[in-house]
Image (tube, rainbow, N blue to C red; front, side):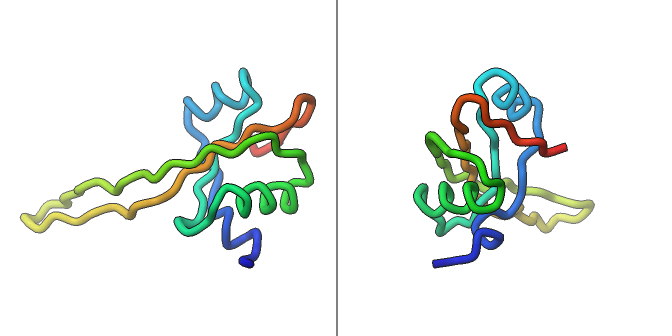
Length: 94
């Protein structure tokens, strides 16, 4: 089993994530690509001490990028987890 800090890499603070957290009590995290839903649930409950109701995941493909040269680069692929917390639970991320 991996450490919780290795599974949960970052919190995604976007406009869509803010709407999800305000209206539906869902929070968006960037997680390790190998992590499954059970590991993500345990990591969130361990790190934040909150009750997780469900976890949805998706793989996000990296994009082509070009910076002032003819050689194109690429941003990294990453995995997104949308975590739904139990009613009455809140996370203060900012």
